[in-house]
Length: 239
Length: 269
Image (cartoon, rainbow over all chains, first blue to last red; front, side):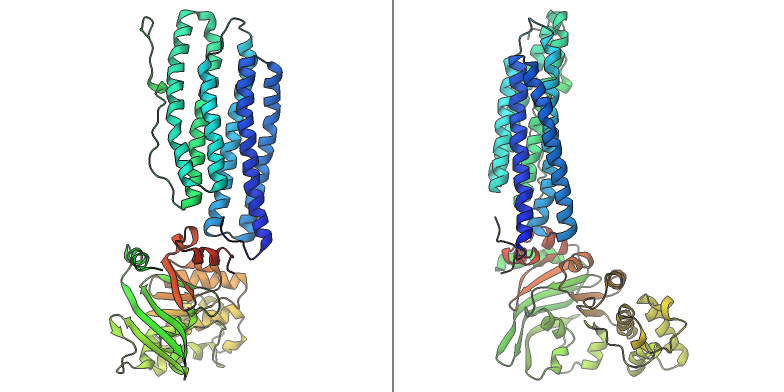
């Protein structure tokens, strides 16, 4: 962290902003774990808790936005302070979105539970574990102002996309084999897509941390692994 | 700032910039034994506003006053180094200081109109510099200058009113009109808005932006926001030295030097 401001209340305000982001990040992590837990345990009650808890993320986002606007108006921040505030604004809205994805997964639990014999494919859990770890690491990078660590997270989205590709094909196969699995498979596919999108958002967080620390906008194109937009599977395909 | 950084900053200054108006190298200013400026290298470009920022006593005003030899009026002041205006050393013995100050006009912190009419305030310079002798020509200069300074509409019907009777913001624009009247090439401004309210400040800032089309402008300001708003280039002075200079946007979003960062974010100890 840079030196203290001459006006100490300014430091306190920035510190509050930082800790609110950290709190949002922690909540968003918990929500991912909760949603996936509800999915695998097929627990409507657990899913309900996740849906309920999303409100806390929404509230924090609003609070951060309000605080950031207030600092912008009153302090006219410059340089690293300005970047800190712009970053907080952007990060809070991304974390809120990540929360929405968890909530959406939780909402699908009831529909999936309608199909008693349907087996939740393990891959969704693996994807969620990766994304949760990425989120944790990017938040650490934010707290430590560590652009190298942020870039490491930035590069770790590809395996998530790979898992999603294979899951996509796997679920299509199930659906072709057994029409009764179409409903749960579709819900599970959406759930997996949500996790995949969360991974993308975490890379956005990494880009913001990079900007926050270096003052430069990362312009490189991130390696993208999600090919499902182009995937066609026909009956009789081998895999 | 080390040599490499200075070169990078200088390169940035040149890129996409207009032609250089002032090229100053190794400028030192001494007040008696005290060294107020310690070897400043800076280039001022045409059609741009260059803001000089830094804490009180950092040397920014002293440097500004070198550019039209205002420091000559301070007995103990001694200036060394090279200050070239369009390639000519302004400290050369052959340079006529009065002519120089017509080319490089100055606007001060406190509006200082002459205790004469609005008309006379503007007409005085062109008359003594022999830019116009016929009444009609002087009238034309007065009107054009007041228009350029954005004051014409407010005073055209009372040009014989005392300049000192105007409001602070109007007085400052009158001083700008007075500076413009002698067709300068560069306008130096030493905290031109520090005595003005926000509306008058906004008017002067709008004016600075318009004047940029025709002049090179150098402004000393204590307001970071003002420097950020009006300038294209910013130089940060500290303890008689330039710590960092470059594109204004870069200085205020991503300064390279820790001292610059600390100053503009209000962390200076």
